Amino acid sequence: MLVNIPYGSKSLSFNLEDSKLLQILTPKDFKPKRSYEEEIIDSLKRPIGSSNLSSVIGSKRKVGIACDDITRLTPNESILKVLLKELRGLGVKKEDITLFIALGTHRKMRDDEIIKKFGKDIAEEYHIENHEYNNPEMLEKVGEIDNLAIWVNKYFLRKEVKMSIGGIIPHCNAGWGAGGKTILPGLAGFESVGKFHCYSALTVPNALGLIDIPVREVIDSFAKKIGLSFILNVIYNRKAETLKAFSGDVIKAHREGIKESKKVYGIELKGKADITIVSSYPADLEFWQAHKGLASGDIANREGGGIILVTPCYEGISVAHKNWGELLNHEPEELKDMILNNRVEDYVAAGLALAIAIERSKHKVCIVSEGLSYKDAEKLKFEKFQTIEEALDYLKRIYGEESKINLLTHGGETYPIAQV
Image (tube, rainbow, N blue to C red; front, side, top):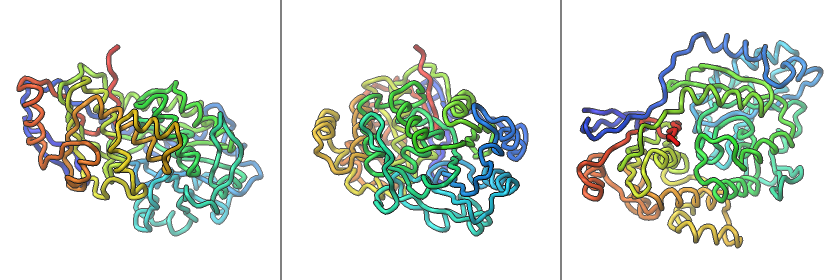
């Protein structure tokens, strides 16, 4: 059978034998039952675990809204069109609203990307600010949580009302995106983000789709500590159309949203494959994002099997973390020792490298990518191939011609639910 999978802004086609295919895992293609305006307004009228927006705003006028960046499909423009109109109706002026791009340690968004993500009107009429995790002038410390220093964007911190928007999708180290994650790591400082990633890798290296994990407790506590007043999170489909909206308390509203997100992105796994082919789409700008496909492949593949990660990675291994490739060249125990004995400079990169190294230790990983060179693949300890067919032939020679195959079309946002 001929199969098409997303690959950046295009798609790749290749042949798979029906008899060898266990399953094609892809997010369910639900259609919106009503307009995004109706869905979001209804959510704002019925906040979960919180007072309504009118009560949250009250007489306060300085509002900060943390927003997802270009690495997510979150429909910022449509969400904000509704939310900003509601805020103006409550007496908040445009000039008193700041939109903070919750980059974590991602690179800054360019002007053209801001227009694409937020829409021309919002980009021109509102102040939009890229977060800078490594700029001391932009950060303020507000205490600690279990020895984790709380460094956060001070301009967001000083807003009278602190809100966030985001898309609830499966995430490999936080379990699920959005909720408090828009703040940690989204608007956090270098030290906080670094310890967050290391803590995640040292406790549950692949937390994709999980909820009750240590790192989620830290995320929620961090958001509460800095005073996040109100969230507006959405579930979107593969076309980034809003299906459901959840607003209110950062924990209670987010947990209700996860239940709905599982219906879209959670796919019951029929069986673990010998070989799993994963498109990292839509997480494919650089390997810093594309590794999410490896996390979903890790769940769908048997230990000791092979994974083919298909991703363009147009911007290479990482724009913001230049030395990440060197860290990725280490084995798990080496990385653990380096982290625990404070022998790394970039704890963000080290924590993520550890999680990937653990996944890599369980599978032989091949990569098909035009943005990653053979030298890059060598750093990652992956085998690089020009085509999916070449990588598949290579793995079949190792695991046998009768190898069973799983295929993930949207590995960056798919949660394979393994049978217990």
